[in-house]
Image (cartoon, rainbow, N blue to C red):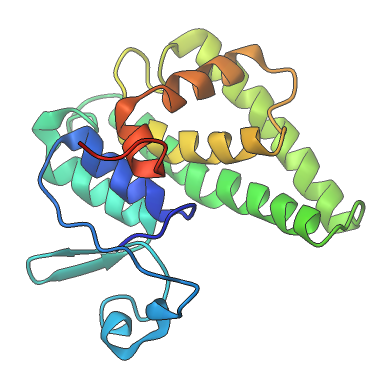
Length: 200
């Protein structure tokens, strides 16, 4: 269950990267389809994305990415469960969900409401600057992807936030982060998931 220009792009992106068959159901948020009784049985909070896999109804983009990467572990979008980099993978997934996404969402909301300065915004901008410095260092050491040579679900989670930030001009002078965002945007699976190109 998907709506363009929302966090549900992440769920569609990982499905495209995995190359598995799926049925895409577009939820019209403007028409309030996400608040209809049938949809609320799938996602009780009435948001997107949601995933139906057999009897399992799953929501939250991070949970969906974690679940699918592990379900199709042989596809290589998550390290093996006993691999040393598995811990780093978890840390990067958590960083995206608990630090990067809420921070950039707060900055976005302030911009949308034309609030140029507030203590909350100042703290968020400082956190964002710290995060970019950290990611710049990670990418210097581990390029081309967040875990090294292999693209993973962590790139989808972190990358989706960075692409959002880039659209607001918030990547600053961080050449490795900017180049990383460019590599992500160039992936065919991202093009399909984001609606840049139609699915073939």
